[in-house]
Image 1 (cartoon, helix red, strand yellow):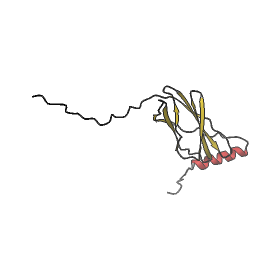
Image 2 (cartoon, rainbow, N blue to C red):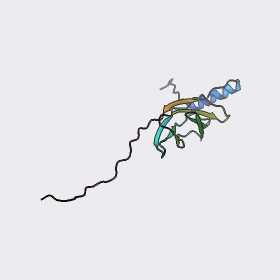
Image 3 (cartoon, helix red, strand yellow):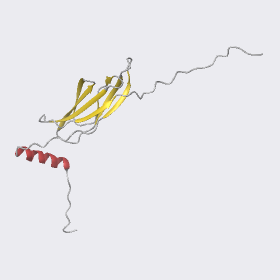
Image 4 (tube, one colour):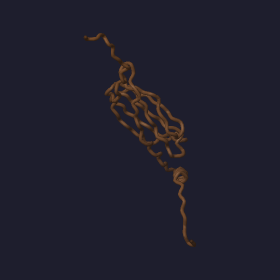
Length: 145
């Protein structure tokens, strides 16, 4: 095996070293865009509003310290921050059936640099069936001769 070369790569370390080198040269390496989000319809409120949560993917970039989710339901914006890089599930949000929901997720690093936003637009659609009817039975009301 003489003369054989083995290369082991460490992409996270390589990325960090690239960022350090870029910082020393005055360049800025942008944070990668967050991964894809998933919207989960979780139920329906008493006033027929659809409830939903958003699955936030994990993040492999080492210096991401938080992710910021913005939820816009027909023009009404709310947000939520997720510390760290682990996958997470948002708080529950709600909107009218047929409402347009715009989601935006941004990675933020330890120097407060922000990535390009991952955006997703969905229309809230009621796909939840009503609950199964309760138990029922029969009553014998008479007998024919």
